[in-house]
Amino acid sequence: MNQNAKELYGQVKGPLDGMVVVEIATVIMGPLAGRLFAKLGAEVIHVEAPSGDVIRRSGQSRNPGMSGAALSLGDGKKNITLDFADETDQHTLTELIRIADLIVTNYLPRQRQKFGFDWDSVSEINPKCVLVTAQGFSSNSQYADRPAYDDIIQAASGLTDVYQKSQGRPQYAPYVVADKVCALSMVYSGLAAIHRRHVTGRGQWVDVPMFDVMSDFNLVEQLNDYSFSPPLGEAGWHRTINPARRPHPTTDGWVCVLPYNDRQWRDFLSIDNPSISGGDVPYPTNRDRNAHVEDTQALIAEFAARRSTAEVIDLCHEYDIPAQAVNTIEDLVNDAYLTERGSVEMIDHPSEGRYWRSTPNFGFSESPLQPVAPASQANGDRDLIMDLIEQRRNK
Image (cartoon, rainbow, N blue to C red; front, side, top):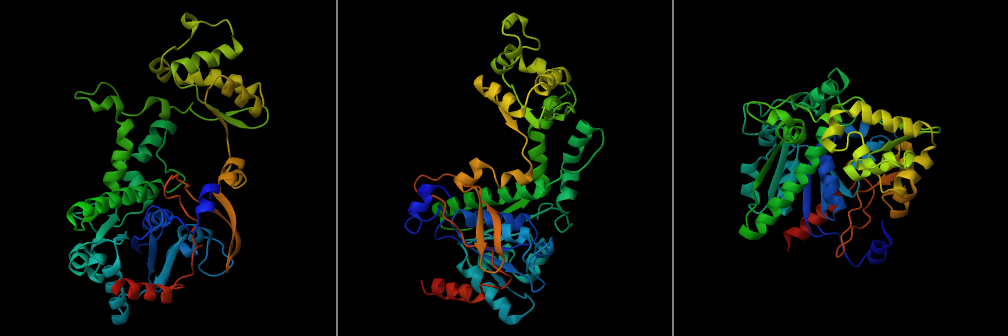
């Protein structure tokens, strides 16, 4: 947390202060959307099944159900366990819908209808509520109830083909990119619907189909020359899919150097060849360099191989050329920039001890983000949530 936010803590809330978000979600996509709403200041209530969210058992833990991923995704939320088949818990769910400004869920359409948080049910209980649903395919398609996880959507949306074009065989990204991109889509589309409610006074249903979202995510640049009819070339963003595009070894590590525009490329070459002029520059335009990625990357690799990582970065920054040492995941928790800003911090959890916590740390000048409470155990906030229901009902 930055110093300004620390000084204002307790006086100024986050930008979504006062918004109640009910998260009926599991694994990563829905819970990540809820986590972002919580980081932005909303009161987020995470509803779990009696068996507990599977993410709670995704890795090692000091106590049952409190894995590292559960600590991260549960940040800032209150937790309650509800058995949708139980009449009392079903009533509690109805009361949560009644007080919610926004509901996020990644349950399938048939499950939402069965348990009473489909749009027809939600709008009847609370017509001002915004319901944000997300699943593999559109709720209004023949594939609505087809199960789909991150790998399935990576395959369907062409992401694995981008790897094939680059590496020679289809493969999955080594992180849950579809879940994360679609979680962001749930947040911004949900906020758009909240804004619309300010105009109309009515809530609405927002459906976020992962296949559609990730297809667009990939087609933006990867369709490229294939955009035209007839095609002017093959699909694929040539610079990014070329296997020569990679970090390069230095004498003591690895570095990313990216002289992207024409001026940066010319200045980069002039470091080793001060006499170089505009007419002498090989591959002088971005188009030329995209067509000869192997050659340009070979020049960068040769430059890096003769220097230490620090020397490469210092020289590049002297010429305003983007360059960065390659961080490991472990490096990030000790990165001076991130720790100084509080974007990564070591905190104390009341039951789990000390652990690393991260935050996106957006900068809001009037409503800076506030520290959020650490993740709770399953059903750890039932009493607080029941009190919140009572308070909101009496408003």
